[in-house]
Length: 136
Image 1 (spheres, rainbow, N blue to C red):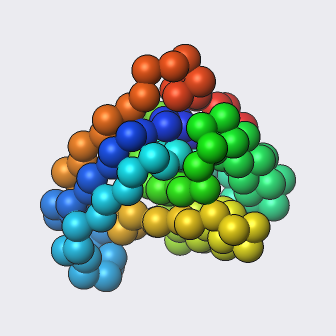
Image 2 (image 1 turned 60 degrees about the vertical axis):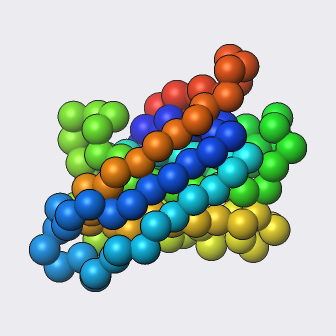
């Protein structure tokens, strides 16, 4: 799993078109402010170590959120950070588990529509810790 964590002053996303024909319809605009935006790439070998990866991802997201005193998170499947990709179902399941774990400890989490190409806008903060790449 690869994750690019970005602390964003503002985040905006609009679903553009389906990348997976079986994805449910999604047209709703999403936005967040003062949030950690996690661009998550689930690799082909990740489903076999899902529990360990979810724990690590949650820990790292909470770490960055703590650095910026926020409890808002956006999780976005971003299959452009590595060469291999997991199949859609296990990738979506991993993201859903990260969401549940964060929500269970008081974070507000938005999960962007899975299986879509999206139009989005990010206003990322300037400090070095606002931009963290993780190879879990």
